[in-house]
Image (cartoon, rainbow over all chains, first blue to last red; front, side, top):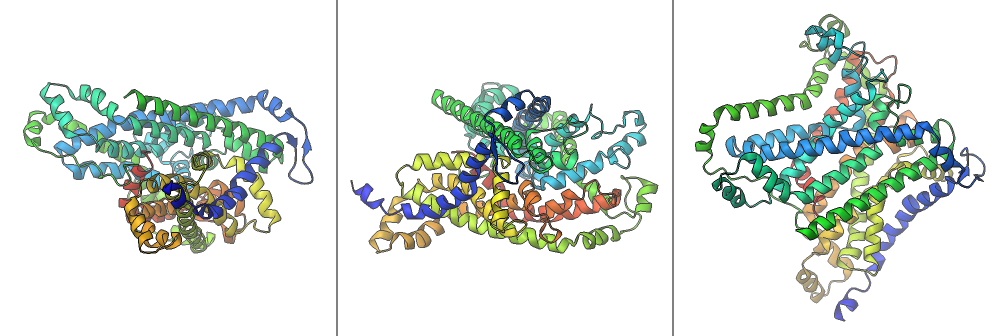
Length: 298
Length: 294
């Protein structure tokens, strides 16, 4: 077993990484799970209360509301951008690049990606400015074209706030799947498309039979990463609405934040973040299995 | 890991002209639709840029969509001075650069042991780094806050640098391990024949050969850390320590923030991000694909 001997002595290289991960990830994670079974204000000693935080959580309407909102945000951040991105990537790759040249396809791709490179806090500022009820650009545009009656307090009205946030998230997220899918498409053998053309396939048929099929790996990756990003969303909600008005845009991470740092209910906040974490890890493994199975089927 | 550096979209355009002439109207409708979408995505930033240079009076008179009567720099200058923006830029820069360098080094060490060394239990280490990469920061934040207070590191850039180095390197380890597990054995063997130890081999052979991937990681770590909001918001409470996103984020809803000041503040948040985007664009678009296919 020459390989075994040769591979000895590498473990030392893992020491700094393991120690650092223990301090920054493992210990805090264990602490949070422990604290979720206690009552603690952050000062003094936590008092063990068993499952009390969890029973309270499942009876808390705010908890259910925050998870309901997250469901809609998954739609806005994962489902819509993935599907729309798939079509756009195919159009750019297979239509624009061929008829107008690679330069145009590349230009559109970079342009669509721009919202992704902005810090989330800045995204929030840009949109809270545009959607501001008093001086915001959107309402002024509506008024200037005679649609003043449609002007709304986009982020301040509980009936519209969540939809406004969803719109902003689609805007923010769309570039990511486009870039991912276009790089996946570049793997496809052009002769496949040519063969389909010879057989008289329409653009839509080629899209369904070749494009969608070939970039399945990217499809799964995009869906997982965007779904998880949606579950974790904090920055945009903090800057756009602070979870309001009247909790209509409350999300789990902001709900936990409020309990940690505003209400000093650290045990309860820990229970919320533990539930969120369990949900994310389960989802990730489900997706990985699905992806694995679809690769085996091919 | 076949797609470290895929060539990005090279569609050959062989008999394009013929097909193009046949479907002229469709061609322009598609292009028009794509341009409208581009405007929707980039437009908000253009509107911000235009209004950042308007005086409040100009804005009140002409609204958000007019071109500024004259270039008005006072909004930007006043905002810059009021929040001491130079300091925030420096804080963000120091934090992001340090995290990017340390994060890449830590990823290299981990991946060297897991990908090339194939140490025992490597699968479990990889699962650990994958999960660490998925964890929401909310589940770590309170203990980190508590520990750093005990350790006297609360409200200092050092705490943020340590935390993000570890979090980013979880992703880096995961990505780099899959690259290193396909590292050409001949190169390692040749180094061994030349009498190089593991340490020398790492820095003289493995790191130079994987340079492009490391550049992608560095870029990611830098931009991700620059854009981080949640943990810096909690850890960097005093004015002198805030990073750019925190300084801008906490000012929202402030009574001094009128329409033009807000767009000025947004613009000076956008400019550095766009600069990085332009500088790193090539690495970035390649790199996004790199994270994809395992």
